[in-house]
Length: 152
Image (cartoon, rainbow, N blue to C red; front, side):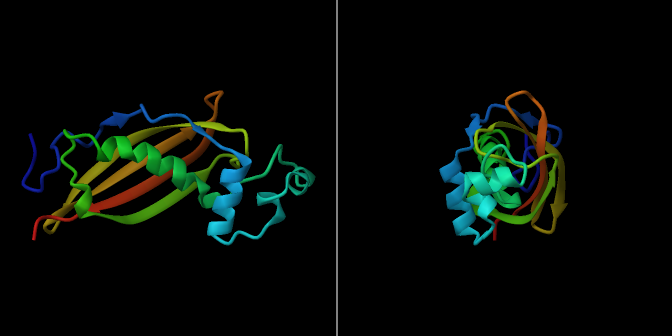
């Protein structure tokens, strides 16, 4: 069942928790740091990171987007959600870090659909991704807003 915007009426409140575990490696952190021009030696060099008190190279704060968006894929690909990805615009992204992400982390994310709000000819879908480490300890909470445009 869906509303006139195509979004499932019962989408708000859904939880998605089947995203694969994301293994954080040194090279993934280094590649991301280069891509976002994060210059700190702690993103590239193990000794520099350890000198600052980290167990290994530390990811730039926005690295969590990789884990967050991988988890969001479960929602986007759910045919019962009614989200046409070709009509999605990423409207907002926010992170609350509970601790830094470091190489060696094994991260899991659970997606919570916190709200669905009709806006003009489309809908704003707000999700919360709770990212935890291999022990289940909180690492990052990511809030995302997706504008799903209506048909022209």
